Image 1 (cartoon, rainbow, N blue to C red):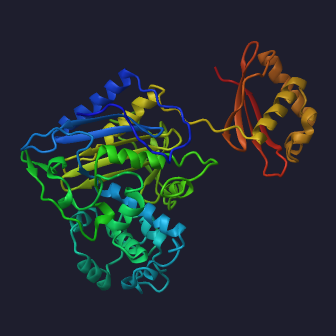
Image 2 (cartoon, rainbow, N blue to C red):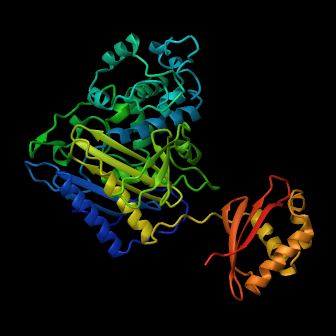
Image 3 (tube, rainbow, N blue to C red):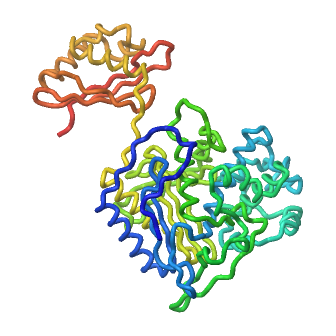
Length: 495
């Protein structure tokens, strides 16, 4: 039986945040989107969930996990999540970095001796760093079709592959090119540096502390009745995909998990935002979790699929185990898909909103990206996922009081001591008085009583309802010891 609301006992989330309000109409719309997609995509089994402020606020299983036994999918059904496993690998590398056991900017060969001397065959090419592997900028060729089939490669065969070397697509550090081989190499780094197998390290340092007891890599150890069996849609029917055993490429895509377990992971990651005071109680510090969004800066523009919503440009970079994008509707998002023989998956994190959406499917390469993005857009349209408010800093508060005094007096000189030295150089006091008089004549009297909204700890925006119009404004503080306004913008609000 599914549960529509599952509260996660995550003691590591201590920040009191607003709970997302999911109205029944929006929930029904989201359920319908996923149900239609499953049928249209010939997916035997599907599970999806929405995490908000540390809770799995909505989740549902559709179809069956096994076409023979017809067991229904539920929140404890085990799916392989393919390349969404990379996020665990990346965070483990960052954890080892925190512990002083490796450097992201050190040559990877420092930790994998078989890589010594690896470079693109030009005299000016540099060595591959650990960061290159994280950002997919090591110069390896895109290997999605090949890499997926290396999952079960024995460790000794991977060692032989490393010793033999691989051809390069380009020198390291020039571009992002997706590499499963690179993430398998990160798994070897984790094993060599930690002194235990990759799988054991992930289990000990991430999975067990988060209570993800149904998550692992060895599918042979999973209870057969809980597994979502992977299928291929071929010749108008489902064909069972062969199971791939745990192996040397597990770090790039071998994880098996459940909706209940994965919701804990999503909640933990989202708990790293916003930055704040307070103890770090998770297995990895909040600041380290936020580093997953630090991209390689090889950005590209991508047009969103029109079936997801109004077409728009997305600026995309690859972070550390995550694609980091700026979406014109949703704002900043961290996302990744997983594609694998028998499985497809997707996760979307909206860190400024405290929202995560994920979905697992049991059909080859059937990543439910379209319904997941549609679900996010439905929540956005319903007003359920507004950005978390940025606290108003003392500097912004003081700056805003100075702006209100300036407006009341019609003269910037009443707050001269709150202005940075550039303000009166950019526009002198007489011209400020003239501009303020013009605005006051256009909109009439303003109480200017509305609060300021912080955009950062150094900036804010505001809007005033006046006698016959509105004023929109913003302030930006200067990087000075005493808070001072370096830029003040005031204008009549557009109709």
